[in-house]
Length: 321
Image (cartoon, rainbow, N blue to C red):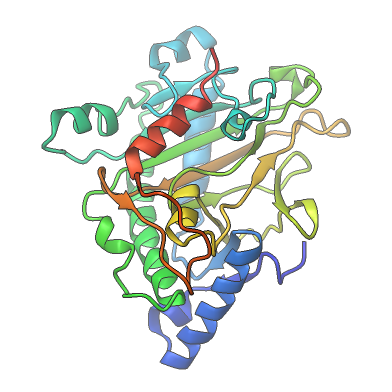
């Protein structure tokens, strides 16, 4: 995939550059999000030892016997363990695929919402595996960094559209978020893939921006563009992968694409390949009304949607069984 479709941008000019540098960066971001809906971002100030520590601790959990992990089993969108066969992300776009070839540990916001219904739905207590006590402090530090990075990105995105600097971030006073640690083991664990089966089936994400720390692999991330179809996503070990989700695409009136992507199954020539991704799904404060920005910025006027009604419908749609 060419740099023009999924460019690597350095956040340093946004954080501390002059107006000319910020404007040039914003133009690059705007153009990239109109084509693939993806960016690679450096200058994010996340120490690589932090995601490495999370992967090591999470792997200890994933290698536990299934009967131990079942004590932490959760539904899609909740906190805990999603075992094999729990999700089929292709369902969200109407694609009938076999279940995704992965396991996940899932966490989310711990905001003390006043509304008991919102609190029960979107900030239930976390379930931290007792067998790997080192995971919790690592994830808490990582999530604090992701929350700060998300707000910086949304500020940059508002600026790139010529809108108020807080156009998106003012809807982030008490946001929820989702955080998945996705484990993609080899065929020794998941078996031979069925026809049309992926580690994660083709889909778009549901929220505002997704921040992905991923590993390169033959059975890794692919991005879809109209110009090139499915192509391997570019990888830079120092960069985070950022993509637009459905809510942000609707907000921008489809000026920016909700980045369609998939994760390939274990490759036939490397069946034991094992990968792990850390996926932070940015969301809004519950009850946010997402309304399309009018022309000339926006291109399509979608009906307004409640952000979290939309999210719940999408999460339910990918649940298997």
